[in-house]
Every structure is written in C-alpha cells, then in structure tokens.
Length: 140
Image (tube, rainbow, N blue to C red; front, side):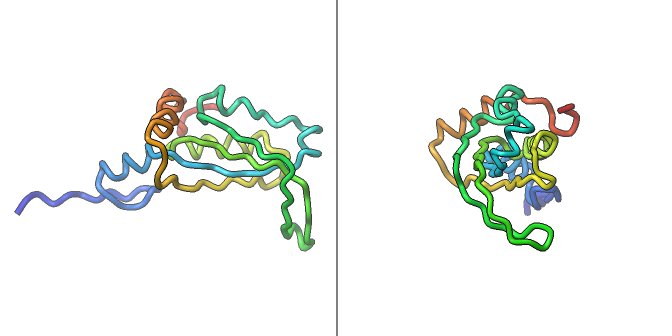
C-alpha cells in the first residue's frame, strides 16, 4: 500500500496540501453594500482595493434596495452593491480593509466560492492579486 496522504485542517476545511493550496488560490467573489448617503459623509475608498492589489476588479451596482432588521426595527435603505473579485487567501485582508473604511457599524462582507468561470479571466484574477501583501501581515 502507498503512503497515506496527510489531511491538514485549515480555515478552508480539511484536505490534502494541494487541495488546500488550490482552495486558497481559487478566486472568490465578495459582496457587500453601503448606503450612498453615508458614503457622501464618509467617502468610501472604492479604488483602494484594486490599487492595493487586494482585488482584481470591483463592480458597483447602484440603487439596490435593502430591507433588514437593525436594532429591533425593520429598515429599508437605498444602497450600492459591491462585487469584488479576489483570491481566497486575500479575503481576511479585504474584510479588514472594508471594515476600516465602511460607513456602517456592521459592514456586509460575504465571500462566495467561484465554482467555474472563463479560465483566462480566473487566471487574470490570480495574476493581478498575487503580488498583494500577505493578509496576515499587511497593514491596511
């Protein structure tokens, strides 16, 4: 019998070293929203995520309506939806960055896996973001 493959636990789940590495490098789509009224009082640094190479691309979708409960009240706000393309390994740094500049007390940041896509586009996301500082040591 061959050698047993060691499965290493990680924040990305269990798997072989190569499986975990692939998950870490695989593209992710982050979503989040902010209120444009808050945005004018506290300018959100939209370009900084790309300039810092934390994201390959940030799409801003204006005029969405969010209905949610906040502090016991049902709220309805006009917001701007962000769709951020990055690598799994950069999600913690991106989350920290968004939280540091976001006008809301609790910033919406949700990471979704990209199961499939246009291979050249996914490679471009990796290339653009691969020179980003390590998320565990990067000052934001």
